[in-house]
Length: 134
Ligand code: CO
Figure 1 (tube, rainbow, N blue to C red):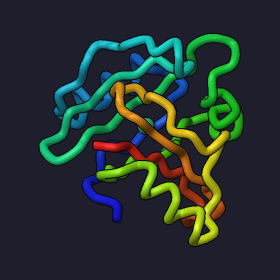
Figure 2 (cartoon, rainbow, N blue to C red):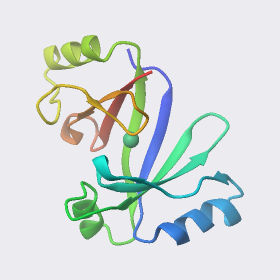
Figure 3 (cartoon, protein in one colour):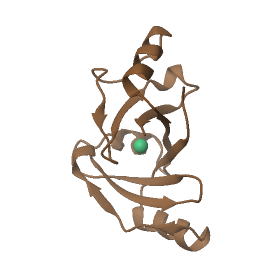
């Protein structure tokens, strides 16, 4: 059911330092920071030949990644995003398998303007999973 790895999201406590690490130390192509107020994050996109890394930094008072950074002061992998062809069919199959879909279970428009859902980390090897309709 799942297809390509769309991105790995890494929450970071210092966005400039993280961007510099990817740009200079790792030699990657790194975007300018982009504010995503609807998602409570500022994002730097790291373009790799086969996927993307998203460096996430909290934006605003109710950022969904603030609690993660409170527990992981150095940052860490926050979620992985897999592509699916049909997000409603994917959701219905996952629910039938007993997996927990976060929120109200309805897809939201994600940072890439495509429908996304998040799946409970306890059902997926301790990793928050995002599904994006490609
Ligand atoms: Co994501």
